[in-house]
Image 1 (cartoon, each protein chain N blue to C red):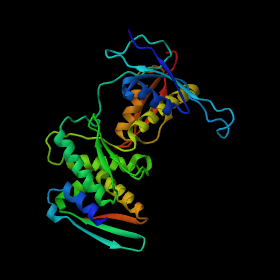
Image 2 (image 1 turned 30 degrees about the vertical axis):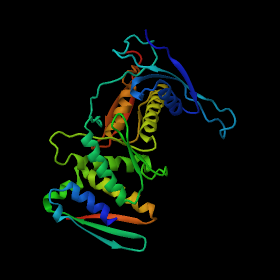
Image 3 (image 1 turned 90 degrees about the horizontal axis):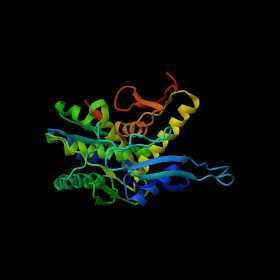
Image 4 (image 1 turned 135 degrees about the vertical axis):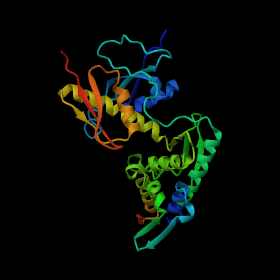
Length: 76
Length: 239
């Protein structure tokens, strides 16, 4: 799950080297924390949060497949 | 001069339209369709089931005929007005998109193959579980959105690709189409506006175009943001 978000975020931003993704794994639910450069925040959130929502949808689909849950937190 | 209408019968209007598209080897936009009967499942699908019936023919290449039989609804092909996924003829773009899709689906642990169609739509051939489609196509739309985002990050002129899987796009389009027709009938019958649920711009466009040539109803989008509602308003008969 971490790799999925990392790949997408790095492909979207201008400063991929500043993309940091960590995963806090729980029994069922894991939390994925995404950090990007301040100037890239808009790139991963998108207009009206559309990009963030799309990433969350993909994350949900991928975790459903392994019968888990994952939450994406974008850290400012 | 013009091709004759042909009749199609199926369980639902959707299926009848798909059958028509197959017969004429035409896309949905290039067909003129009249719904004769919507069909009904009957009681428990056993008693009184009625088949849906439509008339369809390929739209004429030139301008759509202006003098339609009054009271009949015939959609005409339309030039693109709103942003819609364009058809790229650029093989490099398609290759780039395929690379991105493979990377993403690989990280989602979804094994799949990619097939490129003539119209440059990239079809994801998966296990048929519907996982890639998601609820109301959400997952497929999200994937398409992100792929286009990545593709156009450094591009001056944006180019868009369309993703499909398990024939979803075509099914969804004919579903929207028959929904538009059904709801316009409801609007006329009741004399009241019918508002549809919130949709993305591309889906709204299909609804607007489907009812564009129906002089008995008006359509408009209301709401803020990307997802708006389409409202179908019956026109007053005399005024």
